Length: 248
View 1 (cartoon, one colour):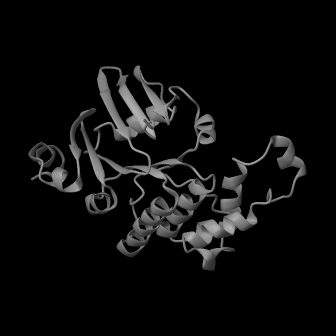
View 2 (spheres, one colour; view 1 turned 180 degrees about the vertical axis):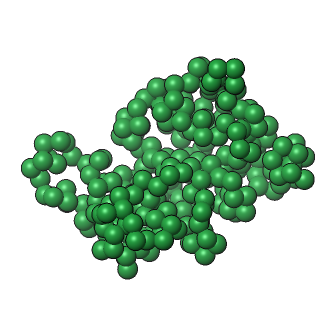
View 3 (spheres, rainbow, N blue to C red; view 1 turned 90 degrees about the vertical axis):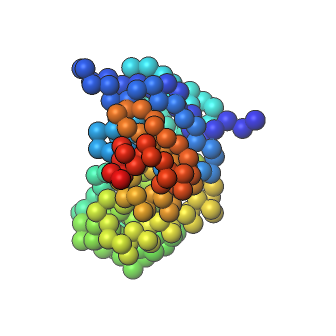
């Protein structure tokens, strides 16, 4: 039996007297697009940070494709094919779109020696241009990232995250601050990438329409614990979710 792309078991995290994450467990199937939703303060970002080793959990374990990774650094997880996008953009505003994507790829290719003495682009220009084209940013290839609209920068951020060819990507509020037209484009690109590459996505999101239309399964957190799990239709009609998050 194939191991889940991501397995989270009994993760807990406390800050003083506040239990931000309370004994959370779930699996994510390979190729699945899973949504993780909940009101502000429900523990979503804390849980993400515990999964990705940016916060040490008080208890529990995380496995990626069957391999225990609890406490692993972000760079070690990247080598295992785990990528992440952040609420705050990680683009370099004074660099071109192309150079941003190349730089993201360089983090995952070659040794320090090859980076020092190899080609300036580490031989990644062609791959970077393909990724830029996939996200339909080719007309902005040579523009400074800082001159792009916020939605375009979100697409660039995704292109950078995908340059390593990750098998599992955790996306932290990808729809935040993006206009409806760009949002539809981002959703379509994520769905296409998932279909073409079988990449697994876990998505934290506040935009309910976006997450409901993107994800095949949704987990709902409230006060650090899972209160519901199911298809978008099941979540929409769940009274506990309506009371805790959707506000009736």
